[in-house]
Amino acid sequence: MSDERTVRWGVVGPGRIAEKVAGDFQHVPGAELTAVASRSVDRARTFAEAYGVEKAYGSYAELMADDQVDALYIATPHPQHHRIALAAIRAGKAVLVEKTFTATVAGAEEVVAAAQENRVFTMEAMWTRFQPAVVAARALIEDGAIGEVRQVEADLGVDRPYDPDDRLFDPAQGGGALLDLGVYVVSFAQYFLGTPDSVFVNGSLAPTGVDAEAGLLLGYADGRSATLLTSLRHHTPGRARIQGTLGWIDVPPRFHHPTQIVLNRPGREPETITRPPSGVGYAHELIEVTEGVRAGRTESAVMPLADTLAVQRILNGACEQLGVFHREDTEVAV
View (cartoon, rainbow, N blue to C red):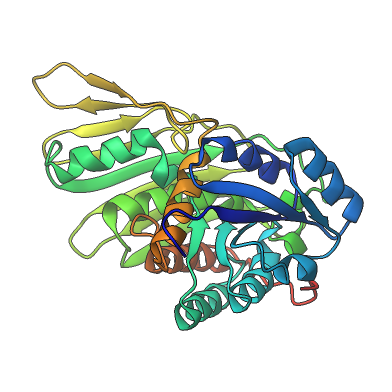
């Protein structure tokens, strides 16, 4: 693909998150949202009319077959990501897969293997890593501003009244705190500390059997650690802190899409660094994929597939310690 060519996007699953993402395409140079697919053609048409999308399909297979679409944003429930992403990759389309990447480690490994075999750009939609404030934190750390990173703390919880029909409490839709919210705290810790050597978890289950809350301790052989909290039972502040040998960086609520960070070093006044996102904040991950496709890359250096697999293994391992075993949806039609 020429560096000058527009990357034409399609959306798979026009739900609430897709509506938020669609509005940010106006902030993405070289990208155009041209198609949407749903299992309901009426829902697809409603989305298309709302966001000025040219084509509305009543099946995912129709979108896969459209050779005028270069990249797909997959925003269906977690257990459907695996089958849809595989179909898209085999159709030669770049994919941005909403987090959590898949419902299982085996599913994630299969998608990654297909992406690498077919040399198709594939990335998990972890928008946090692309937020300008988080990019600024990473740059400070790489410049040695807080010395060696030794500890990370992060929490993300919401007060979600129990409803067995709610997606978040439905095992068939990949419900539970860890896959929906825990992915943020785990990915954040993995980004700044790397992949842990051990994972310990304590938590509780909802009546449907999904995890309702969890506290994780990620351990590293050299003594580094991350303490992480996630919950559907109650709100948490949504803060994060990156602790180093020479200082620390606070990421104020909500840390997964911050507008600023605070650099703290002993003997100095705290330094607040403000870096607001473009649009709502989804534009930055869309830019990463669009630029990657135009440049002929197959994955992101910021959200590489190895990191996605590491995070998936942590999440599923923690779930299984609590007695929660997720499954991929093998029935979704593609």
